[in-house]
Figure (cartoon, one colour):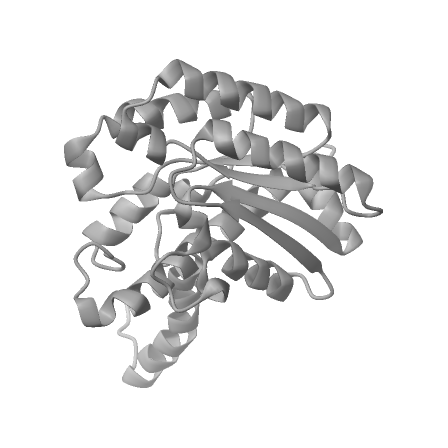
Length: 258
C-alpha cells in the first residue's frame, strides 16, 4: 500500500466537503429513514410536472410558525420556497389553515371547505393536503377512536377526489412526553397512514433527533435565541417535508422494464 500525499489528501477533502454539506443540509442532518415516504404521491408528481401545485397545510398553531420572525418563516411557506427553488418554473399556492387548539375534527372541516372552494374556482383544485394531527388530542386526552374516525373519513374523501395527502404526527416536547400519553396518538396516526397508503411525516422523531443531537432544541434555547431557533426549526421541518415529498414522487414513477 502507498501513502497518500498531503496535497492529494487536501484535494480529496475539498471534493468530499461539499457532498457532506449537501447531505447535512438536506434536512438538517436527519437520518434518511425518517425522510422516506413509504407511499406514492402521484397527483403531486403530475401537478409539479405541469408547473402548478396547490397545497393545503392544516393543523393546530404549529402550521402558523408561532415564535418565528414572521409568516414567511413558518414551515409551510418555507416549503413553498424550497419546492419552487427545486423545480424552476413551478408555481406553488400554499393555503395555510390552522389555529391554536384545533382538533382533527376541526381541521377536517377546514379541508372540506378548501376542497369545495377549489371545485368552484377554475384551476383552483387542491392536489396535496398536509394534515397535522394528534398534538391537541394528546394534550387534552381526547378519545383516540374519535380522532381515527375523523382521519379515516377525511383521507377517504381526499382519495375519492383525487387529492394526495401526507399525515403529520405530533411535535416533540419533553413537557408533552412527561404529561400526556403521546405515544398512543403517534401509534394510531402511524396505523391510519399505513391503512390509507399515505406518507407520514414523523415530526416527533425528527424533532427529538434534532434536539438530542443539539442541532435544534427550541425548548432549551435561551430567550435571546428563541426566534432564531424557531426559524431554524421551521426551516428544518420544511426541508424534511420537501425530502419526503420527493421520495413520494419517486415512488409514483413506474418501475423500469427489465
